[in-house]
Length: 311
Ligand code: CDV
Image 1 (tube, rainbow, N blue to C red):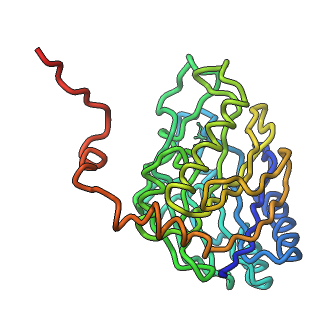
Image 2: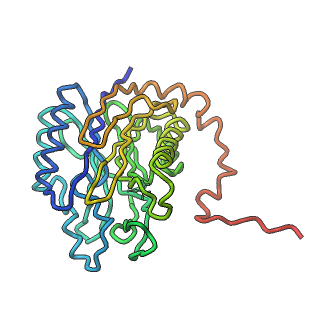
């Protein structure tokens, strides 16, 4: 048995005016609770340090650079790394990254239990749009503010196992899990900020959005025989509602733990990484069963190409 006691550290809303220092204090409180409850890994949401700023349209790039970190750890986040190291707890969280070359990414990192960063991931599937769209109930400008990630979907040796990261919208794409599955991933960790309203289909409703959230995570877990830990930033943020749904799926695709509510909260679960073995060695033994000679389209084309009609 290779047990990882994971703490899924949901954050409630972060208002636009809330400082990084205040958010880090909230993250520290969850870290302390996680350590008390014996967690060795704590996972926080996407863009954990700020409000979900891609909902705001600004013309000037300089205006939105205030949401980005140029160093990790930085002045406001150093305390989190230090306390995690002192407690012997690994952490993972999302943040907006600005590189020395001036590139902007939606990023997450993973540390070891000594507070050293051992893994970085940059969000690949960026939802939304580039320009202000008056037809939407709210804006979702990730394509304006971020570049698509350039690091692929790496998997890292951590917690005596293999851990990979993705971010929010990535969870809806089977390719995300399969690329990590092909590296033997045993736990996929991710954070999300999901508006409870579909900006292009207001009638969709929260129940349906939650259904698609769970469906994606459960399918990814089952089809790749991996644990999946998904962590929300939730609640009403700057007048916009983000859904909860922090949960953990086992390698058979079952939801084994789910956090109620939309406030700061910790969901703790023991994840035996050896529980991934059965699926990986039987029905999803990729080496025996995959037929890559038929998968060429997956990487050869992006959009749909319908077959020609017969005469
Ligand atoms: N932050 C996100 O990536 N949110 C998307 C919304 C826009 C659909 C999501 O997939 O949850």
